[in-house]
Length: 206
Image 1 (cartoon, rainbow, N blue to C red):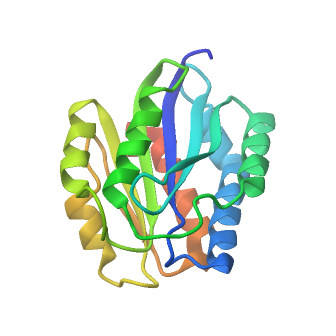
Image 2: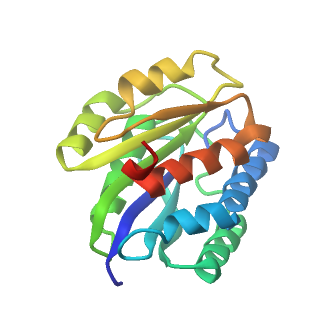
């Protein structure tokens, strides 16, 4: 795979707190965001003209599965293909606890396996609950930051209204890191659009 400006791993919560309808709203919202012309323009605006993206689904510790493998997005055709693959991906694992720390380990491992040299490495964690099983996310965050990864978060507040504070304290880190919120999964598309724009544009948006 040719070099890219950003390698982005999307780590998506599919634990028991995410019901079937919410899962469809989340995946559909992310796919819709990836198809937007402004998002595609941001993905292709850097010196390499492309980003590399993969998606993993996670729940219990050790359960993370690659939903869509690494894909180089250098234009609308690749963005559309990735979005379609995401919509078609089976919900595996099928529920479980919120193993946020171990999910971050899996996301960092995927970034290490990215087949393209990338100027920036970003882990994008989306979920609706605080970590409640397995490794604590804070130390994992610190390991990722030490390895040069920026970790961002999208906290869905329908289950835990104070989740943003958990993401800010235990999840996000690295240069330019941030956490966004959305009220529920119906707002996921707009929140993810804003998140992707910031991640692809990087310092250009600051």
